[in-house]
Length: 450
Ligand code: CTP
Ligand code: MG
Image (cartoon, rainbow, N blue to C red):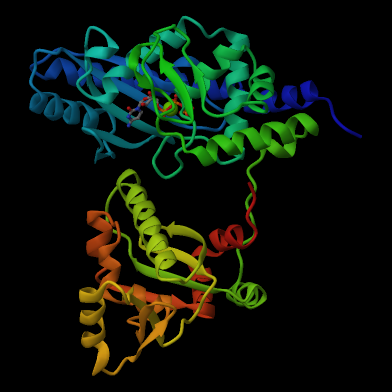
């Protein structure tokens, strides 16, 4: 029997809402973190205040999530080097077992009592449009949302996050390029409920634009625009990929036509075995290629954009050379990275056609003829009014292309480029060995869903 939308949502809300024990545990941890931060600040020569931001500050975190975002806000009159120095000092005091990460500016990350804590220094700027780095906006976001979220809306936010997470579209990191927490909250406030939000999304035609504070005319070239209420110059959805936006539209329709809890659970496929990969390759009778190399030791927000740029450069070059790439993917874990491309053509002829000028362009035509007349090539002959030769093709297979230096002519990022110097190129059924590391990714590849 078909379930009602509201029944499904009520159950999801119930599961996504942290219970009393979880709230108390979180509160105990944040109290401790705040205390440690204040102490560290009092021992440092500059003053700063401590802010809890993000979903744990706004009561919109999902039950079971254990992520705390603590900001240390410094006065704007201290120079950047000092902000970094004292920021890291306070961060290490707050998270004794943490390590520094280098995003737009350094911050400390690590575990405290089972919670994943980020301790981020920022500047106490006048308004979000005076920011010196992206993190300076965050306290403004927190304040804006605090004034607008009530208990009902926080429940709706949790359901929305659970849905976006399940479909793989949650998280503004550059690996996912999905909806950030802040974006999700703004969209829920804008629509008033999860239901109104999915009903609207199911019917969106792109681009879609929201401007909650009516900031006005600034144009953005993105498929979804939500003008930041705290900063008219910024699109909150700038990091969202078109694919994740389309994904939301698809699953919104699916949920409305047949409401069910399964759409709030991530689909995790069983990993493929090497034999299953070989079978898929045989069934499809395509020519997959994998370029495997040691993953450069950089944060995901640097790595994934470079992998994406590399794979799209590779795809274009394979297309240009006639290998008919069907689909691409990229996989990485801590150690190993893979650029994967499935070609429709495994081998091209040993020779390729090379057209010369038409016969009546006398100078050019004579030069072309003389250049090739006494060489190994087939021809020149005439095809209609043009000279043509058939000359040896430089690469006959995609694997030869990707093993050659021609790979470095396509768009690659700095870290990926140097890591690729030492690479292994697997072709055809050889890609089956990837299943040992990336069996789940390959399962998803060979059985793709929206
Ligand atoms: N933030 C940041 N740098 C970090 C961690 C967080 O700038 N290292 C900022 C983000 O830009 C965001 C806020 O802190 O404005 C919270 O980030 P995040 O945890 O990603 O989002 P939440 O709203 O807390 O949502 P979630 O429920 O996913 O934690
Ligand atoms: Mg958070």
